[in-house]
Image: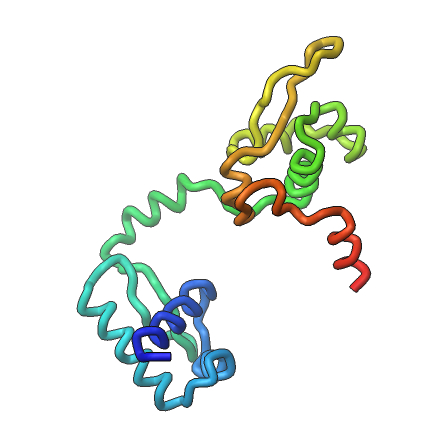
Length: 176
């Protein structure tokens, strides 16, 4: 692995962490020597500082972390206050799983499986664009049919619905 690749690896590790990563953790993962890691980190910190872009790598809390440039704090605060939380509640995940595996499905069928009212959860999933209305079922009252969206695939890192684990695979993982 050349220096450029080593720096890219460290950068990727710091990025996915979201919190300070200790030198020891980086050493354990990368198997680079401590002096080499320090040199690579110092180079990266200098490169980010010279670029003076939206991100920096800093040494903080006995570790290293990628942070945003404080020059953009005003816009970042505005963004954070308007951006919806990316985490889903357990009821939302449960409902989303039912829709993903049984689509197209109506609300009554979701509620029959879950055993509780799903109005709020369905509204949240629609607002987050993880599900969409796919039409109406040819049944009394013509209830709405729900299915997943491209955003659902993107959120879970799936190419298409065939990449969802099968019930057999899920059962096998539970037993392990």
